[in-house]
Every structure is written in structure tokens, then in C-alpha cells.
Amino acid sequence: MAKYKAYPEYKDSGVEWLGEIPLHWNILSGKTLFHRVLTTAFKSDEHLAASQKYGVIPQSLMMIKNDSKVMLALKGTDSFRHVEKNNFVISLRSFEGGIEYSQYSGCVSPAYTVLTHAKPISYEYYRHLLKCTPFIANLQASTDSMREGKSISYEQFGALYLPLTSINEQNMIATFINDETAKIDNLLQKQQQLIELLKEKRQALISHIVTKGLNPDTPLKDSGIEWLGKIPQHWRISKLRYCFSFGKGLTITKENLQEEGIPCINYGEIHSKYGFEVNPKIHHLKCISESYKRGNLESLLSFGDLIFADTSEDVAGSGNFSQLVCEANIFAGYHTIIVRPERKKNYRYYAYIMDGPAFRTQVQYSVKGVKVFSITQSLLRGLTIWLPPDNEQARITAFLDNKTAKIDTLIQKQLQQIELLKERRTALIAAAVTGKIDLRDWAPPAISVDANLPAEEAIA
Image (cartoon, rainbow, N blue to C red):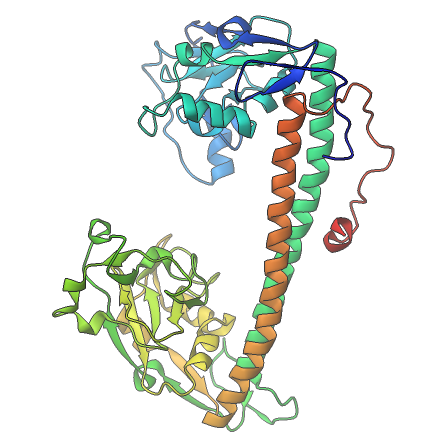
């Protein structure tokens, strides 16, 4: 924030979350700035829903944005509240994400509290203020005794104190925030695009090497399998049942998990949470009691074992498995299948095959289901695997370990940049809405970040 100037004079606001505010700003209670709306819903009102991500929007639009269905109240809406455009709504999870702004007219459930401004205000300014980090922290501090999921009442909101300055200054602050956050969001999008490109490069590399090998001059043969295509002439084709033994995870529930004991990986954590590898020395896993060792040794994983989830919503887009990459006592948890290499020598080669598009395509062709797909031991046993000689497997593994590690490092750097940009965005909004920077003379710069500038250059 060093490049922005402070106001010439400040005063103590007397409000902990605001701290010092510009001398000419005022402090008013929430009930003085906003009145509660008790207007009953009109028959023509569209049903609205409040969310932290999108604000208050029509439920039909929420369904599209979330690619899911929500419950539409088709009758019995006599107790619903009417919402006008530019009203604010205290949502059901308001203590987590601030108060939501509505750009739509419609109606909401009586579980929500509808607010309208009682003083001239900039809607955009208060939209940012009521979602900024210091205000949300204040909400949480004032609702410590509340159970999770309960919304803030109008009385609780009305007892909080909020800043007020001239509407012209509010508008200037809001315009500044919208302009600056748009630039940051543009950079965030470019960083995310770069990450996706790196992930695609990683997958393309794995796919090529595990199906064609390291030597481009090696003669190829037709594998006889449409989704696999040609493979090196000296490679052999086998089935998983000849190369692996199979087992299942513990028959337990989430309630059996605890903080201490033997680490346990469950189906919801496989691949999506820990990725290609799982290492209990690095990843924080919930545990199961030591007493489960008795009679359940077949569910204990060994170094190099693979763990599949027995159901999946995306068999083509992710590996749907993780591999234990260290010597450790760790249980496979509920809804998992253990796939143990008969020979541990080149265990990493098997993982690279299963993380590649060719193997995933095979799984996709084999599974049954519509949205949720079932993966069984029987299905896995019948899958095809292609195998170079042992020494070539070792060379392929070493090559891919080296190359993917470099790509993973680049991805991690981009993720760190994303976190820094998000932190800057959050800090900038908080500083602007609480008067820590003087924006009265601010004007949008003539030249913004070039939309075509690569993300890594834009951030440098």
C-alpha cells in the first residue's frame, strides 16, 4: 500500500475493527444506516437465493452457475420477504461471509433479513465494506456464541457500527476498488490459465513416454487396442490381475476417525486432495485407533501400494488413485480398493501408467454409472497394462520423475503468486473501505495491464 497516500488527519473511531478513520468521516450504527424491510413477497416475485460467491441472485441463475438443482418454493410463499434491487440481505451464513447485495428484485425466504438504506449511500461502497475481511472478523467476534449455520439477526447487525462519508467519496472508493480488483482478477485468471497449460504439458509428457518410450527411433507395433494405439515392438501387454494383488479398505465410518493413532486415507482424499502421491509424513491424515490392527492387517498399505476410490464422478479427468511413497503404517479407509504391485522394483512406473490419459480412457470405457461411477476390484483386475523390460521401466520412471518435478515446481510458483495476488486484493479492499488510503484525488490510469500480456510478465 506504500504507493497510496494516507489522509492528512485521522481520529479514533472508537470501533475496534475500524481503528482510526479520516477526521471528516462519521460512525453510525447499522440500524441507523439500514432499516429492516418487512414487505411481503409479491405474487409476481422471482425467487432469489443468497450466496457468498454471487450475492443475491435468482435461484434459476444459481442453478446454472452451480450446475446443480436448488429447491424452488412453488407455493406457500405468503411469509416470504420482498427484495428490491439495491437491497442487502443478511444471509444464512452471514457470519462467515458478510452481508449480501442484491441487483435483482424478487423475494427470499423469511429465514433471511432484508435491509434497505436509510441514508444516501453508494451501494457499491457498502457491498465491498460488508464483505471486507475486518468487518467479517467483527461479525464472527460478535457471534462467538452462535451455532454454525445460524444467521445474524437484525438486532445484532444493528448494534454494529459502520463508517459513513460523503456519497461522492463513497463512489470514488468503490470505483477505485472495482478498477484495481479487475486488474488483479485479470492477473489471477492468467495465472490460472498458465497452471492449466502446465498441467496439460505434464499429462501430455506422461502420456507420450508411457506409451511410446524414451527412444523415438524404437520400432512400434499395433497394440490391437483402439484407445492405446501403437507401442514399442518389444513391450508386452498384460492384465492387472497378473501384476497386482487386490484388497479393500477398512469398513468404517467417518465417526471412527480421530486425531491420533494410525493414519488412514479415505476415498474423498484420494488424488483430489493429495494428488499423485500420499505421504503421511507430509500430509495431515485423520487416524484410526491402534486396535484396528487386530484382524485388519490386509487393509494396511505397504510402500508402493496404490489406493483407488471405489466410486468417482470424474474417471477421465483425474487419476482417481494415490500411491503410498514412503515406509509407514497407514490404513486404506472406507470405500477404497488396494492395488498392490507383485513386484515393487519399479512401483512408480505403474503409477505413471495409471495417471496417463490412455489408462483413464480404458477405465472410462469399463465403468458403469451415469454421474457417479462404480470402480470394483473385478473391473480393475480386467484392465490392460503395457510393460517395457524392467531396466526400461526404471529409465522411464527416472526421466518422468525429473521432468514432472520441474513442472510441479513451476505450478507451485504460480499457486504462490495466486495467493499473493489474493492477499493483495483483500488488503486493498480493506484499506480503501476503512479509510486507510486517501482516494479523493484518484483517477483511473490511462493504461491498464495489457490483456494479452503473459501472466508471468504482468506480475514481474
